[in-house]
Structures are given as structure tokens and as C-alpha cells.
Image (cartoon, rainbow, N blue to C red):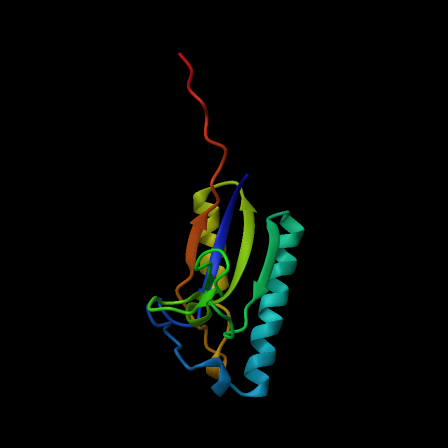
Length: 135
């Protein structure tokens, strides 16, 4: 089994096919989307491929140390995850090909007008333990 991270984006990825922003969806469209996501997770739980998922608020602050005794520096000139990442899902699947299948199914969640969003998802494998070569 291999773990993969599926990243959903607010922006920063190519536009979805059904690119109507979620804050413009009707209550019924939002309900259908959430139900699709819950059913999707239930299917992955049934196969043992689900690890976790989380939606993320767009509010947040980028923080770094500016040295001992100095206040932390917040925000900066770079794109920040609060502007980009809307949420994630972690899956544990048998192969890269299966990870692609899962990501494609997640991309098909319904959006405005009940049509699939067909959003781009970022698929990233987790690092695995590196083998050590000794001579």
C-alpha cells in the first residue's frame, strides 16, 4: 500500500471545467456536493483505502522566526497556502494507477447546476523509508 495526498485548491491550479465558485452555488448544489463527498469517503472506507480528509478555511497566516527575541514575521511576498489549498484527502492504495482512479472520481463531485466540477487535484505520494546501501 502507498499513501497519497490529494490536494484541493481554491486557486493556483488550472481552472475546473465547471468553474462556478462555491459561494455562488445554491443550497441544493452544496448539499449534493457534500453528499457526494460523504458517499465517496464511505466507499473508500469500505475498501480500506481511506485515511483522512479535511477542508481548510481560507483564513490563515504564514509565520516564520525572525530571530531570538524578535517578534515572528507574518505573511510575505510569496503565494500562501491560505490562498491556494482548500482541503486535502489522504488515501492508502495499492498502486499509482489506483491513486489516479480515486483522484479522478473525487474530481467528478457535482457543482453548479449538478454538473461535475472536474477540478484539477494535485496528487502527491508520501515519502517512504529510504533504503540504506552499505558496502
